[in-house]
Image 1 (cartoon, rainbow, N blue to C red):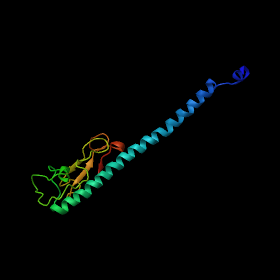
Image 2: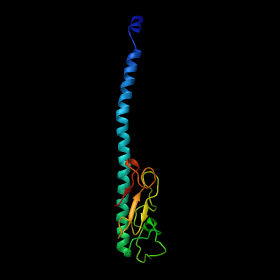
Image 3: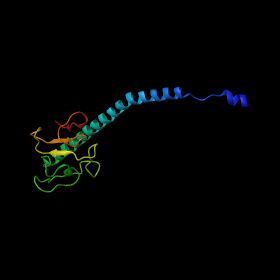
Image 4: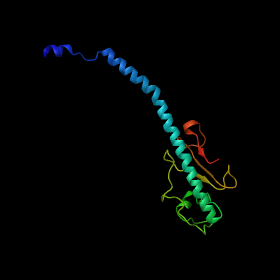
Length: 145
């Protein structure tokens, strides 16, 4: 029995270091790719939410013959807005949830009607990960124009 215990050997320090180096290499090459996918998923999610808003805004327009004003904002999709222009035929809520969702980065979506880019309708956008206008890559705005 004692021969068995003496005959068994564990891993050497060099073998453990080789495994650690391999794991470090894998983490350094695969990790950034995974984070890039997360960033792409957030941008795709924001674009999809903008499409949902667009459908709801189109329904609002069909009922009321106009889009909500900038002041009425996206809130007009979940509760009848006050002010001008009046929503006499409001038939909402136009969104499933009873609250306006935030973008994937936890910020409010931006809405302007009439739009600067879409002069005959509205501009709808998320300011991206940095919550500032413009930007590039992950910080770029996600827009409907």
